[in-house]
Length: 218
Image (cartoon, rainbow, N blue to C red; front, side, top):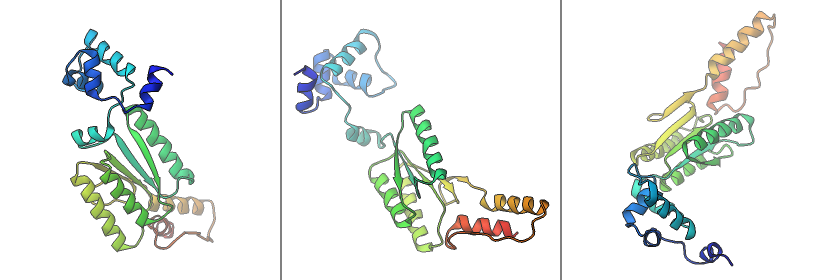
């Protein structure tokens, strides 16, 4: 059995053990391994990295979250990951996260506004850095207020919230022009000579559906 395998079976190595093996202070080891702006260079850095590799050391994510107030996790909450629309959003978010060292956690509400609220609450308790809500709002005012309250708590705790769809107070929003796009569609069909239409509009309590129908009718 190798030293790394023995270590994997034992308790995880601590930062103190890494510092002791490298012959440096705990503060110096922390600056090398935990991304400090005052990160040491040269021989001292190499000693710390070598010691960390020998002990199979990995940072304590929970402890870092307490120290920094946030993790490097961003939660992406979608209404249906099997839908190509949401799958495309997820793929783009993951690529952007990779470029920034962000871990993207994807949560599928399966169209449930209650589950959406629960996911935002869970991400807040996990001290996620941010949450992205992708999907249409529904007509239930009580649930919308509960979601807004959860978003307010998330923001008050230092997190960030972004929404793709309809706007909610306090959150950065990418607005989807459902109404304008449906109107453009109707105008194009009219220029082609069509005059009789049937619109399969979707649920009447879904903002995306009602906005598209209103735009087409206008």
